[in-house]
Length: 250
Image 1 (spheres, rainbow, N blue to C red):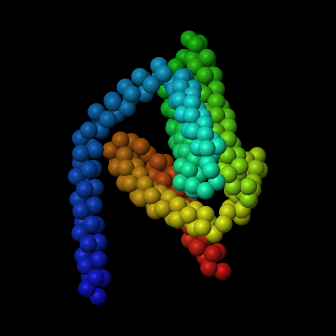
Image 2 (spheres, one colour):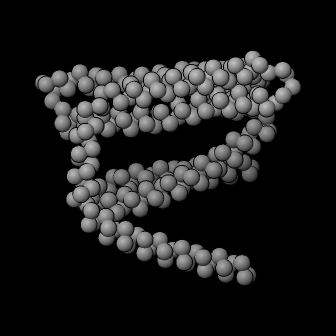
Image 3 (tube, one colour):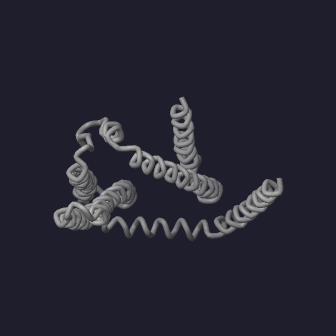
């Protein structure tokens, strides 16, 4: 009972602190609304200059870094004597880093594509050559997708080479299901732990984004759409998580 009372006290204090933080944060946001809008417009105008090349540049950097990581992973695998498991762990970690790069590059690439289109709509003029810039922006998105797919395919092929029992083709829409079935219990447990950690991180991120979008709706004319999109993502994530828990219990 004492521990529960302490927990209730901490919850009340945390709620009060968050309420005060939100109140003063809203006041601060209202005061800097004009400055923030001017800063954003200036940033978009500046980005317009580099928008056509941003995805091309970032993806090239990620591609070079990913290839270097995969080469190091393969070099470690070739030097493996068949006994030292630390060598294999380091090789797999290098391949995993390459896949992390592709995941980050995918999100960053989609953001840069959207920001590029927005800056083009705000400051571009098709009659003055913005059509060429639009082609470059679209080409950058396609280049990002192809490069990410190639790196992921190489990393997955390397993992299958180390662990021949792994199954699944990257060309198959059911790849994740097939791959999951080929994992042993230890690997599945690691995946479940990672999934739970991701769900908790996503919940925290959605809560913060809801606060930000609500403040923005009241002070920066965001409208209701940003808040609605955050809540839809949050709802889908939580409902799917609980549905999966109920499915596992059967």
